Length: 462
Ligand SMILES: *Cc1c(COP(=O)(O)O)cnc(C)c1O
Image 1 (tube, rainbow, N blue to C red):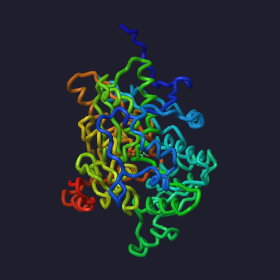
Image 2: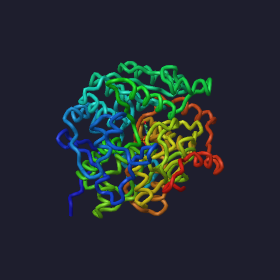
Image 3: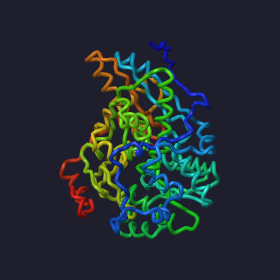
Image 4: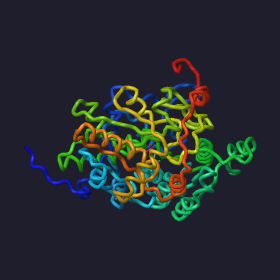
C-alpha cells in the first residue's frame, strides 16, 4: 500500500517538474476531428491556404493529428515560469461548507494580470509569429480577456498587436481596454471605418454595437491585407487546445505526486479551449484504455451549443470569411442573449471536443445564469477567489456533483477548471445582487433560425 501523504491546500510543482511538451489528444483519437473546409470548394483547407491567414508553424500544429507530444519551445517555457505552475487547490473550505464527503480540487488559471487561462496560448501564438519574422498580429476580442492576454504576449516579444473589440464591450469595459493599451496594443471598436467589411456593416446597420463575428471579419481582413501580419484566435482551434494542454498536464503531474485520481473532471465550455486543455491528458488515458474518468462540459442555457446544437459543418464567424468547421453549432447567425459570461457566448465549439462528445466520451450540461452567480458567490465567500462568470459555470456543476455525493455518501474526487477572476465583471455581480439578473433560454423556434443558416451541401444534412 502506498503511504498516504497529507494533501496540502495548494499543490505546486517545482520548476523541473513542469511539462516540457504539450499533449495533442488528437493523436490518440480513433475518430479524428473533421478537417476545416474551404467554403468555396468544400475541399479540406490546404496548409498554403491557411498560411495566408495564420502563422506557418501554427498551421502545422493545426493540421497535426499524429504527434502525441510537441515540444514547448524554451522561450515559451521561460514565459510560463512567470506565472506557472498555476496552483492546484484542494477546496477544503468549500467541502466543509457543503458538508460533502466529496473531495474537490480546482486548477486556478486567474493568477496572471490578464486574469485567465488565455495567456497560455497567447504567448505561444506570439512566439511563432515573432519566429516567422512578422511585424504583428490582429485579433478580435469580445469580453476582453483574449485581447488582454494577447497584448501581454505581444509586448513580451515586441510585436505589434491590433485588437478589434466588440463595440459594446469597448464602451462598457473601458478598463479592459486600458490594460490592453498599457501593454502597447491598439484597440479599435468594431465595427469600424478602418476596414471594408466594417464600413459595409456600418452602412447596413447604422448604430450597431457589433458582434464577435463582425470583429473576426475585420481582424482577418486587416491581417490578410497588411504585409507582415497574421491573424490569431484565442479558442476553438486545435492549436489552442494543444497549448492549453499545459493546464491538464500540470494538474495530472500534481495529482500523480499525491496519488490522487479524479473521478469527475468539469470545465466551462465557450469555444472549448480550457476544457479541452484540462481534460486532454486524462482523456488520452481513457482513449488508450488505461483509466476511466467522467468528463462534463458546462455551458450557459442561453447559448447551448452542445446540449441543443447540431453536429455539422458551419462557419466560424458571422461574416462567413473563415473556413467551415465541423462542430456542435447553433448556426453562425445565432445571436445569444446578453448573458454576462461573454467568453461563453459563441455559437460553435472546438472540433476536437465536438467529436469526443459525439462519440459519447464526454457529457455536457447547460446551466442558468442566476444559479451560476449563486454558485460563484458561495465559492467566493469560502475560497476567497472572486471567480469570472465563465468559470463559475464549472463551479456550479462541481457543487451539484458534490451535493449528490452528500446524498449518496460517495467520496468522489472532483476536479474542475477555475479559468479566471471576475474583477471586470462587477456590473454582472451588481445585477445579480440587485435581483435584476434574468435567465434567458432560447425557444426551439429561435434556435431554428440559427440552424436555417447552417450551409447546406451533400453530407452536411442536419
Ligand atoms: C474565454 C474564457 C472562457 C471560455 O473559453 P474556452 O475557450 O471555452 O476556454 C472561460 N473562462 C474565461 C475566464 C475566459 O476568459
